Image 1 (tube, helix red, strand yellow):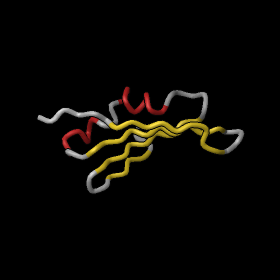
Image 2 (cartoon, one colour; image 1 turned 45 degrees about the vertical axis):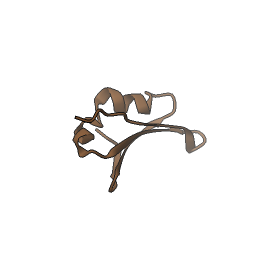
Image 3 (cartoon, helix red, strand yellow; image 1 turned 90 degrees about the vertical axis):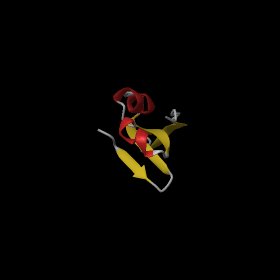
Image 4 (spheres, one colour; image 1 turned 135 degrees about the horizontal axis):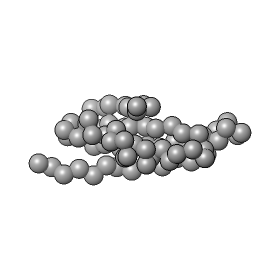
Length: 72
């Protein structure tokens, strides 16, 4: 299940949150195919992984990438 999807006029952001030390958030988005439902939208798609440090109660790492897609 996707943690957060933000749909804008020309862009879609797919965001996954994880606790530091658990699975990699960005890899989970890719492995589970969370973006697949939006491939036909012809919008730019960004995958965003955010990890939290429980002890510091803050973001410990943040990674993103633009999804490449092939035009039909």
